[in-house]
Image 1 (spheres, rainbow, N blue to C red):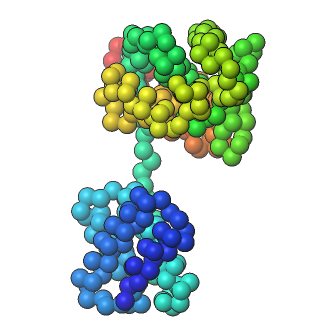
Image 2: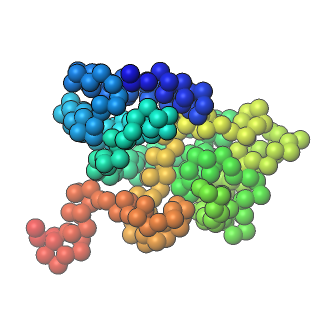
Image 3: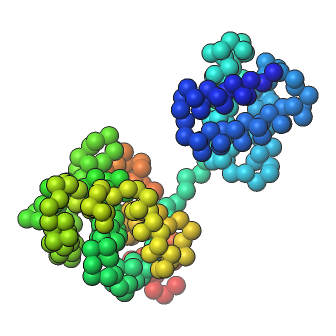
Length: 297
């Protein structure tokens, strides 16, 4: 027996994992069990770490990325841990296995020209809905916030005198993030429109839906996706792309890495170092401008 039905019931009913997570676990587990059954195994107690390694290798040979294989191995880790707790296996075959090495992905970002089109050339309607969409894009790029941080901004978090936003980030860590003069004007205009549109609201949130409620993450995602689809061919069109763009543009223009780290609210400099990447064309440009013999090359 392989107890897969028991395991799937456990993660769905006892651990209450989301339906899409359960579906992904089911697919990953079925893939693995098909493989071991092809190896003539008839019981989960016969599975050894060598079987799992061979299965992982077969996944890679099929062109599946190391990141995806690691996700499937994570499913198996949860599966075998459950079986051991239930007493259905004596040894956990996953204990000798480590995750595959994954090359770190470079962040997806917009060019400065694309951002100019996004924030300068596109016309937004003057009503509350249009200006809400505009300010979401302006803040995500101009301040580099996460979508959740944007949604949790309160009117009281806007300090116009110092031109600073008080942001609550991951782990409820607070940070003060400055914003530019052009954003100060945009925020002032938006606050006036917000007060006019919702004169009797007691909601503290800076950005309200058309119904006067706190925004939902899916709304922010849809706004960003809609406008990035107009100005760029990047495959990813999420709010985080604008955060990546904010950090990349700062790095490209010579901003100190520690300063970028503080602006983004990273706890480790290692998380920020990914923004030091440069295209070959930019490296050539820097070389030609900085090296005494560069322009003659």
